[in-house]
Image 1: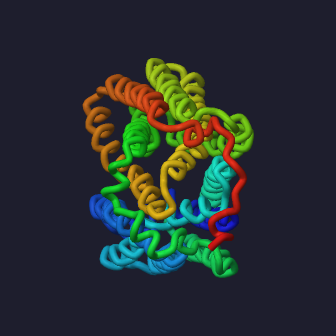
Image 2: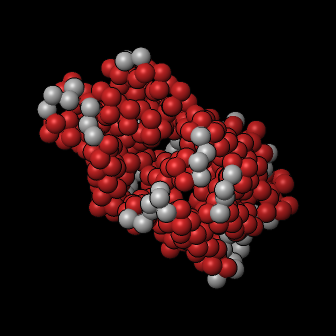
Length: 410
């Protein structure tokens, strides 16, 4: 499954940084229309995700993830040959249906294959592979694509299509992986759908933490960080690229070390520490803004240091948050738990640009920095409040007995 993640993330790296450029510069779609098309994809994934979670619980993750991966592969192939906005709309619609369920399904499968003690390591390694694949894919694609040669963009989208078929092949070679986690009769008695999930107070508190941290953290990188770095700190566009490269390097090098450090430590305290680290990163960026482009070296160091420190926080978050989600989930509702946790990304991707864009546009960069720092710190307080709602096992401080993975039992 981790090999499959490496394949799909490599393909994602081929196309992730270039979709807007491809639509506007190669296919001559206006900026506004391209933005709406990409927004439609995001909205569709947000709407379909709950349905995917239900299907994962009722049918098993395997029967959901396999067709979703095929849909994603087909959509990338269609994008390679889309010449009009309607073609792009159709391709992105397929991609939305596919992408909305893949992450929740894969998280459910990885949970079924591992013991409680192993999950934190596995989710951390998955995140490291994800970043490594995207970084390598983006670097390779960057050396290939040329807006004056449409065929180069077609090539990277076709490579992306092939990479999505990698995890399909992996799953087909593992026929007993991803089956339904509980028997139908048992599921019917124990599951109550999303109403039951949302009545889980610790999980609701965890969702509050995740939403606030994501809005104040990850979701601000695309618009808020880039806009602040360009307009307030006044660095060149290339520096932003170097900053993202530094982010990837720190994650790949530090993730395995951090996983060892987290063994046996409180997950709620770890999540609280993530909020503090993210706040520190934004503070570094804010201090770089005080230079206001007067010292190019300090401005560059500040922007790159921000992303490096932010990456360090990511290495603590990536193994801990999904492990906590699955520690609170039951097998009968595991797909729904993972689907709701995944929806946080879609919601924050809508909220963050709406909050960052206007503030930066009005020259209120300092206020924006203050808000995201405050949001990260409040998220830390929410994480601390979660500690009193869960037992030591869910918090990761009690030794979990070694058990046979669910997939093997099924």
